Length: 398
Image 1: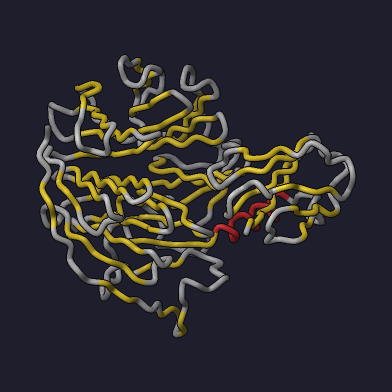
Image 2 (image 1 turned 90 degrees about the horizontal axis):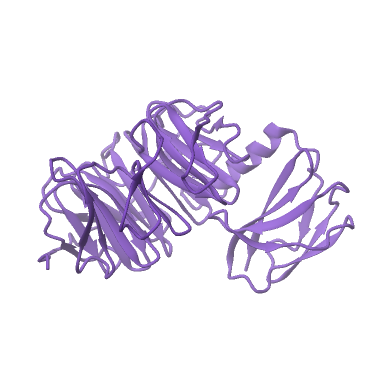
């Protein structure tokens, strides 16, 4: 069993007020029409470089180039700082599940069971390039030497087993019972592996519905059959896709040197989200927390309201169904849809991960109801489909 070493936490909280164009711009503002940079470290205008992000239960975790992990539980208005391992070690990847947080760094794997308040060192004493949590299992990829390997723990890091050796892994992906580790695919929980036909290193994965996306230097590869076959498809998207995240039916792709793009049609086309913001170029990680998307870049941490880009996308498509409205929204249960188009073929409700949580059976009338009473509180998206267009609307369940 690998020994673990406890690390003391710097008991420091940083309270930050953002001064933009001579006026106060608190992150609680409802309007953020562009990306806004968050100074997680006071008096450091150009950083730190943010290599990794994770979020769960309202907590946001930021991995940097300084050996620190930053944590916020108030949408980025204040931050706690933890020194992990060697000063200047890079935190390449973060994963979070409830109160457990895992940090893969250039010096070791670090584990916290209390939202980053205290950390234990796993004791690998080597660089780890990625870490991911899925259905109770923790996966990590070591890198930086001849002993590169993929390892797995079923007890949140207490004990580990080696799945395979000899290949540096930059990302994990999970699609049903399928496990993807870089360019390798397992259908039996890691007992056997096959290399599939993506001819370059994979930096990132994301799943939207049943479609799997893989980010590479030349753009995006897509699989619709759980990784058995792939096709290169990046219309409008520049090369070097380093990170993904999804919100409802929207997929966001972070690139190196070209900022962040998004797609509302399952990757058939992509649009740039950068606008007039020139600081978002090299994007290493993204995460969604609440109503905002966070981006880790070479120029620090950036944030933007999701509703900005969702609204922008509807305008770009010129959708004819802009008259659709809901009442009440927010809702506690039953919501009435008004002025629905007559040519609807399908109505579904998805959560922020893109998972379908409800399908509406009766939508023939211009006004009909959607029952959300059995769903937990949160943000959802109603997707109205016809033969030639898709209309998406955001729903708040209280």
